[in-house]
Length: 416
Image (cartoon, rainbow, N blue to C red; front, side, top):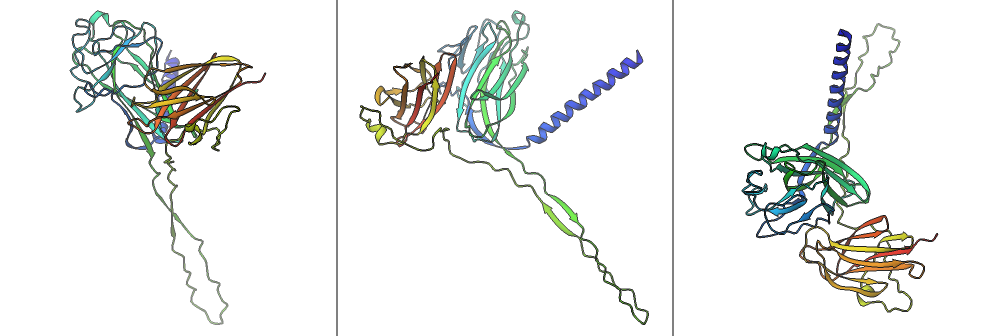
């Protein structure tokens, strides 16, 4: 019995030591000097409502007015009061300090666990580490209706099909007296060649009494790695002894001079931070204007650069194309050409998609979609998110266009 207890004690302390070493290593690996936020999502205010481009989510719907959303719904509210009798706390304001009538995202969890937030962030620097932070509060009062479930949220940062990082808040417990906003942070690195990431949040807990929360102030800050400390290493030179001459008379011992030690300052170079402008990944660097047989080249295509940003090969199918504004809704409008024919004219980009369908088969094997920016909106350049769905394949393409440059996507039938 005594041996078993001793064995358990040794194993326990080894486990604690291992965890501590890992946490210490992580802390040293990300020794950051954070700059100001490059992304700040505070959901605006009642007087200045910023429409956040949350993609459609299967189990959640947005209610149009401030207030108390039911199960499977969310709202952007300036305050909470009297929700569901006495089951929810009163929140007189959102979390953002100093804003007037500021809004927060209020979520009443759906019956089944799942994603409640998807947002794409463009313009990040490839090969750079960032910190994401956000504030959450359980809006339920302890003990009311049993508070069966509590929010348990994962934050996933991804690029394309690759997850860059995943963080867990753990259970966010309700409180009895005052609601408590809590800050959650994590670090992720943007891979080389990418400058767009997706932020996804899902709730692990089932819907029901207690699983209700508010979200606010999502920020992304660049992590500038601190340089390693300067180390001074003394380096001794070998001692040289003058040769002793044979003298007839006894001579004094020759003076041996020892060189003074020299100092060598070694310092590792600082990491290179690529301060590149926001550019979309292109599959072909050459800008080439192509003319399809039998069709005149439209003026907006003939007079602007048309870089190819994506080429897709797919088997025969019907492809669904959905086009959204990317980021804050700022009045961007676009015109779309399909094989040099006008398809959509001066369409406004919003959080609701422009939906198109094209058929890809032997009779229609080649498709060129050219996106033309009609304006730059209030926040240049004209940016959009295009989602193409072909069977079980899904492609997410981030597009940036201007009054000098269009964006072209090519879709070809894949040969068997």
